[in-house]
Image 1 (cartoon, one colour):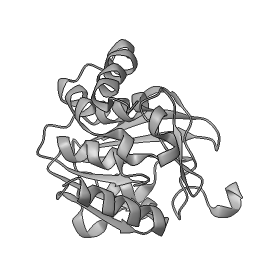
Image 2: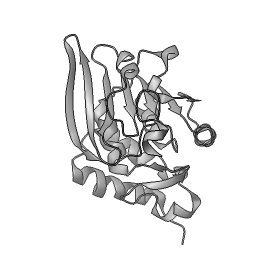
Image 3: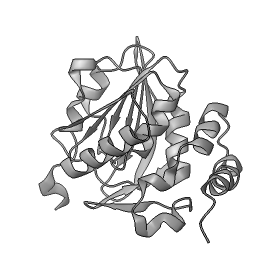
Image 4: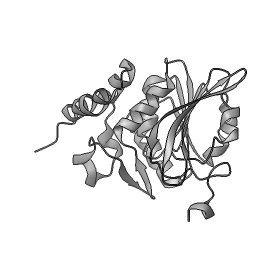
Length: 219
């Protein structure tokens, strides 16, 4: 019997998001809409809406739905923002952001993932997402500043170029910590410095690049 993906999305929102405290109406609405099953491997279609991350190839994952929703809610998007995402991966988080922001710029270091995400997002009709292959820890100076930056991999500290590419009032949402466990952190830039807020513990793949972990550190 073919899965009823719309029903599964609604169940995911009720049981995984609302039940855990996700309250933002826009975030909840978008999670009911975006077809997460399109972003997973074919063998995982039946578990696309389950409460855990899934492998997408190249030692990368599509994050647990709750974590994607939590990071999205932390950005507090109004629909007018230019958002930078570090770590395109499957493209699912970019699709969520594209529904809630004006423009999304996403950087992926693995060419095959970037190409797959680009094709899929175009097929799904997203026209406000730009993707490039590069070291995401350096940001995307051509389109800076960004009112919001989201990093979907764990870093040892805040990459300085990303902090430089948010304006006053801008937010950076990023997992900060060691290689295997991190704390989801929100940094808001103010005139007198950064306001840092720890949200919760989390586990992400390491953020690789000049301003984060190096390949030799995680090899």
